[in-house]
Each structure stands twice: as C-alpha cells, then as structure tokens.
Length: 324
Picture 1 (tube, rainbow, N blue to C red):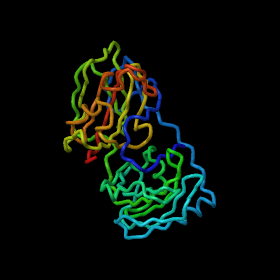
Picture 2: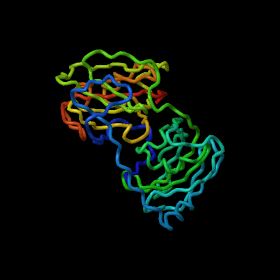
Picture 3: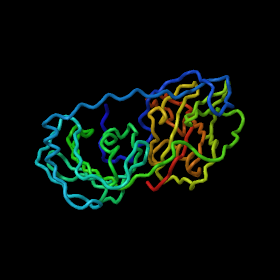
Picture 4: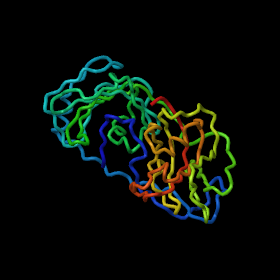
C-alpha cells in the first residue's frame, strides 16, 4: 500500500495514471450511445492491501506525542526525539463534537508537520492560512481515510509516518469542517454534436464511452457539455472536485475516479492544458465531454498507460469548485 505524506494534500493532479481496463459495453441506463466502435468501460480497482498493524513500540512512540492548546488554533506539539515508527501509527488526541465524517463527504483539515528526527516544524496550514480539503475515501489519501472516517468535526489526530524521502514525520491533523457533495452531475441534459464519442450512464452515473468507428482525432480541443449545471462558473485558479473517466481512442480506459469509488479534487491550474481550458468556464453541476489533442495533453511524452502523442477522451462531472 502506498502511504502519502500529508504535506501538500491538495496538490493532487492527473499525474498518477492507472490502467483500469477496457471491455465491451452492456446496455446502460440512459441509452443512445453508438453500438459500433471502441467501447471504453470503467472497471473497479483492486482493493488495496491492508496496512501492517503498528507494533507496541510504534504505539508507545505515538502515545509520547504531546499536543496542547485549544481546538481551532495551531497546537503546541512536542515529543522525545528522535521519534521512529515502523508503520504509520496514530492516536486520537481530542474527540470532535461536530458533524460525523462519513465516506464520500468532503473533509476540510488543518495540520502541522514536524520532523521526527529533531522535532522541528516543517509545515503548518495555520501559518499559511490554507486549510486543505479532500473526499473521504479517496485512495490517494489512504493515510487519513481510516483515521478520520467515523470521527467528528473538531477531532484532532496525532500520527507518525514515513515520508516520501524515507524520514519519519509527525503530523497533527484537526478537522475543521465537513460537507456533503454530489456524487454525479446534476442539471439539464444537453444534446451533443453528432459524430462525437458517445456516453451512456449507469444508474449511479458511471459513464461508458464509445468511440465511433472511423472517428478522426481532432486538432483542436473539443468541449461538449452533456449536462448543464446551475452552479457557479469555474475559473482556472480554483480547485475542483470531480468524477471523471479517461479513455484512449482505441477504447483503453487509463484512469477513472469511478474505479476508485470516490470523487477526487485537484487545482485546475495543475493539470494538463486540455483540462484547464476545457473545465474553466463550465458551471458546477455540469458534465462535460473533453476530446484532448496531444498538444493539450502529454504531447510526445509517454505517461504511464498513455502512449506518446495520444488523443485523450474524458467525461468529467464537475461537483464543486472553490478557491485553491
């Protein structure tokens, strides 16, 4: 299992690509998609392996992390150095008293990070005044999901884990808010232009994309609204929360939030130009078909399951947009 550090949680973009499968499509709820062509279906991702259980030494180390100060303010954190753990370990410092955190909801957190070796602070959202939000259950935040789901707003969690540079870091996380968000686009259906890739929706909104036979890759970005939402207009400097599925023209599904089971969030100025240019200007609640030429995707660079010079097809449900 991959354990990400908590520092920079919001800086998640379409950079980690997973091959999620390609199959022939069945009839879906909304109908109307072409029956001939390359069919791109989302398949569920394999369940992650459970993380190792903390040892007695790990538990003792985390119990030695002292946290003081009122909830809502930057905490005072101290511990005996060097602090070491063999696997991510945590304890609840303060029980929250607000709304319960459920999978699929969007949690907003503040946190402070310290080096386990010397106890020096390396990052604090209280200092930057930039709390971070993510969808509970999103596998990209596996370090936090199990520790926060079932807690309440106001909860404080102290944890120790190994960062990407293999050093141990201590993090104290405080949940400052939770918000339920839709799981799919909600609005008025839009009749798409003829000849484009077609989209069928399952009962839960999960898309199946069909690339028509003989479809020629466009030289310009194609932005086709499929559902018109009635929310605020998205701007390029915002962080968006979306459900999305991505396909190649041969029907290969290379990435999908649907396969992971939860929406995902990322800053719109931190993704491929086709996303930035295609999503900005749309309204929250909309579903958009994007056909992204290589020069607004990954160009002549191979990226995971995406070959060089690939045209990319995305179906994106825009669930929320907020200041980055």
